Length: 270
Image (cartoon, rainbow, N blue to C red; front, side):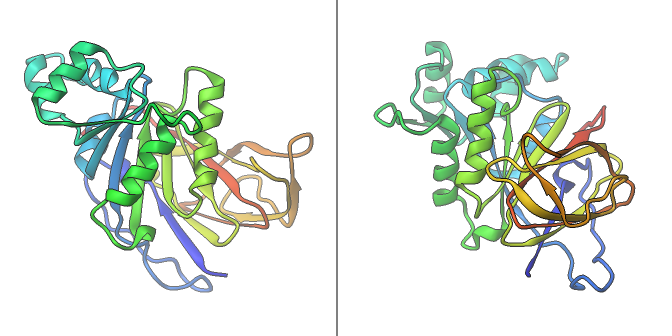
């Protein structure tokens, strides 16, 4: 089975080369990724400026524009708020536009930001709309090398969180990472085995593997305190929560799509 590589190197203050894994896993380094950033309508994490600087395409989902407008100046309390807002201007604002404030909309319109009204589509979430836009618009042909970072996806209403997790499954062919101040989550598709390079300065040790979507009859791991060995997982049965990373590489293989989550350490600074 083909190996899919993962690393949260976008959280590192400085780019860092990652070494290849030794055999028996394929002796190849993780791919260089192109990042896009989507801002949703929850409080910005403290490391939002770091992710912003990593991204080549930056999109606000409706009320995420309010969070960007209000929240970025709060992360730079010693700087002029207007200058901060000018420095952190998105390329696009997209969604059903029922949450963005008029003053925020006017501010970004005057800066030439594209504002795309998708209010005619009530069958998909704002995150779904933005992910589809990024997938179509990102300046990269090989979508396997695109990584979409999403802030504001966790916290707030539970149905919103579940909707955001559902987007991971709807776009299982894309790398999408949901981030909060406390943790990150992303999908591990069953079509691949997975190698996760743990960025010890910024993440861990607590982690989990969760079979959201369908039960797993066989999941195996290495690198965890409580490894799984052809273990069945399902809601109503065993799920791997409150596990602990014990090595700088974790491997996962499963017959079902799994959600990987790992804690983010504090503080992370640009």
